[in-house]
Image (cartoon, rainbow, N blue to C red; front, side, top):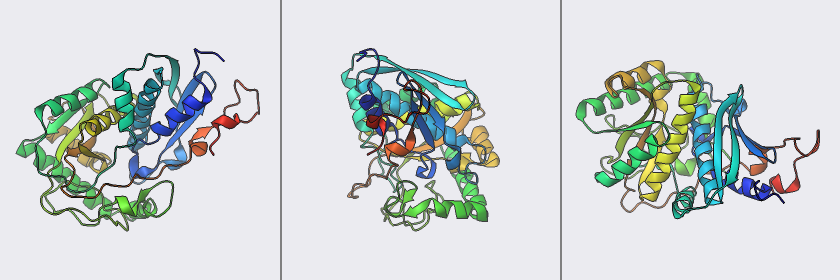
Length: 338
């Protein structure tokens, strides 16, 4: 056994945590491969939501979030991830794992992965601590992105207006509605947004909330939404920028979880050119490219804990790679899903 290379069980365990990352409509559009020396991440084009995500932004952001979670999980298991992003067409990342002395912070961050939930309910009306805002901004900056916490009235109004316009345009699109219904309100499925995780009550017109998922079965809390709205942005809007935005989103979400804060990613107003431009110009004041919105705050008072959303079996997302085991040979048994 080569102690400078990870064993199959370690890689499988790290990927099992990585795929707990959030993705648009919980579509889980990732394709992982392990050669025995390196881990590779690709996007699964069969899971591209072409009506909600026509230019593939959410696809790359979702994969970037899983990439971040993989590096966190690997570090907690004693392996530092050296990530080579977009090394060749069709390959999002090639990851070399090298021995690493695990720190307490690595373990704490990895422990946040299974605790994180996409909480679409109204949050309690409590401002974030200044210390927590600093931690959240730093977590994004460490991944090459910027997190803007939107607090002043003009910017909040512009962000809410962009969300309302995007929602209206989507509701008028029958193809979008069919796609949304196909990916939400599910029961006992390994993907999609389950009924028990989608909010039943509709939001007030002046609140920025979440999509109208089909067959929602989660009762919302009463009163005004106390969520703090943030916009995650990058300097550009290339495929690399979108991938890095996903990594930054993963870092922000896990940081929020470690701080015992609720969170939920919201991408709908960034999926249309017109509303994305409104956010760029009127919320970010033209500084940077908006990639996604994250609602952050305190868990609703007295609300029940949310169940974990389902995930596809590892055997479906970790694919066979002939090298280095020999052309045409199957992946070893310890890498297959059980």
